[in-house]
Length: 328
Image: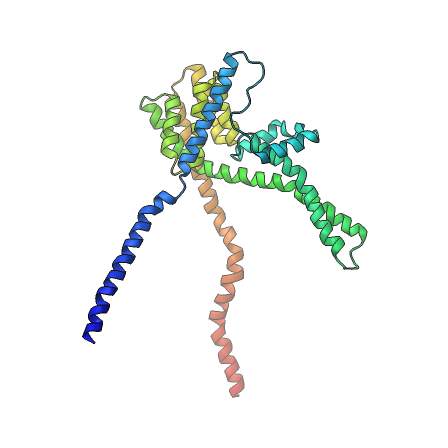
């Protein structure tokens, strides 16, 4: 009996040590297995730098036609583009408003533009086809031919507007994320400018510092830093930042920078005023949400709290009354 316990004790200790060693190895290797989001965003900024550099070199060499993108299109993109060009629908891709919305959603380049246009073309046909399979394959006698056609048209209409709905949701989600992080980025920009850094260096510093906590606004500031370095017109680079974000606060920030450069006013003073306005605006939005909270809680209280409260208060009295009636 003692020998068995002597054998089981070291075995149990060895198993526990092996388990702890395995957990330690997993803990050490887990950070290396996670994808590096910051690295991918910095790569995207470097790609934008390279693209702007190629465009600037093309203008300096007086090349009439724009150079093709350095990215190699995949077969899927080529197929979609060929279908769009075969149907003479390229004008759908050349809409400035569509390009602006895709940029506000964070979808850059010609790939998302081709995919969005192709989906707007294919999804209505697919939706109508799927609806036709269901309605014409159904044996329900109430479904007349007219009703079946109406169902097909509704399915095609929903499928046609589905990409626009997804795009609008992506824009709103991205703008909310930027809206939350922009006051902090603006405060950091003020600190950089007041410490003696230039506007370009300030954009780069904010992009590197805000990357882990606010990757979206860091990416936009990094792209603006790249455009300020390569574009000949600084105002155009700032306007591109305003167009990519679509936020009124960013537009005020861009206007302050542009006016400071135009009239020679101190950039730090203008940025500090804009930063204070953003802080006050965020505080007012928080106060509005807090003020609207009682009204929003009225319906849940009426539906969930009051019935339980009445049961607790009146329930014992009702039970005693029922017992008195039965006893009488």
